[in-house]
Length: 143
Image 1 (cartoon, rainbow, N blue to C red):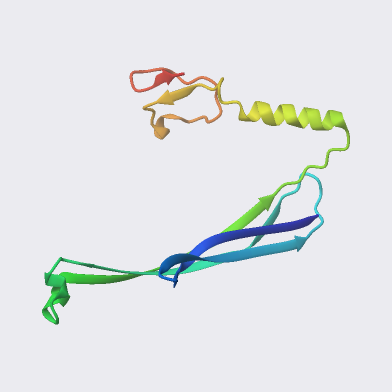
Image 2 (image 1 turned 90 degrees about the vertical axis):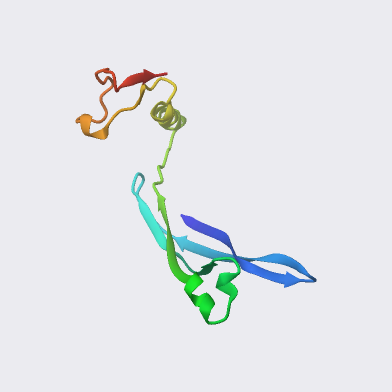
């Protein structure tokens, strides 16, 4: 299986002919892998590091030389982001297998028949996955 993944971000701006134009940074991942049907493959390495500097100040007072340092503050923030791609391929040989998997996926994603509750507390729920929860003053059924 051949895998190509790319992501683009705005890396800053530059001025061209008096206009601010974004600088687009691109990260790309290419891989050739072999994996069993139903297995999960994890691809990583698309890392981004941003350094953000900001300054806040009280109007007028923050601009006064020497004395203005009491009325302004600067901060630097380093942000690291890593993109992980998880792929779980499923090889379907016959049309019947494809149809069966399609029905299962559709059934798993149908939310219209689900029962949702408003105002419930996680501490009260001991068994996740049950179809029915007891109704009370705090647990009002929402459709």
